[in-house]
Length: 167
Image 1 (tube, rainbow, N blue to C red):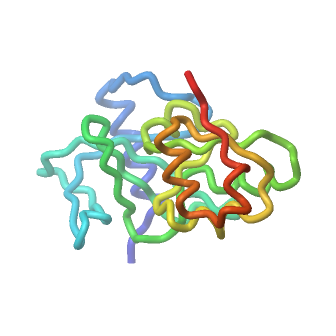
Image 2: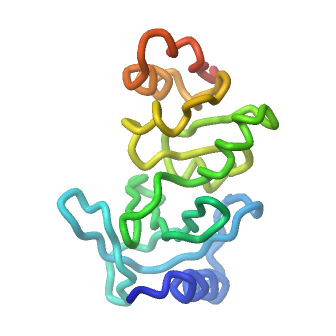
């Protein structure tokens, strides 16, 4: 049985002990670990003291509960989850957007979410956007390319809800 809370606290302590500094938000707790990727598309990871990749570790929270961890390689933007659970980072903000309490922002990279997690979502699988964002008013994607990809997963009648940030 994987103790994700224990692993997450070890990653937080490791990041603090090594003094890793990176321009990440202090609005979400994160840690670091050396990891090894595995699975058909390297969609899973495990902490590995001999691993070649230093990854940021972020909590996957859904319904207010820590359900998984996500490791993110800052150099390649590759990400993987520890157990294959969850739909993304920042998922709980979707309900807030449905209630019109915020304007939702969808980002195309997990590192972007770690930098700006407030009212922001990173989906692990964009093909789930129609189901995940059901009932969400217009939302903004962080690039035109991402907006076009998201629109391809939505029925034509819902594509106007997707706005693109031109920054």
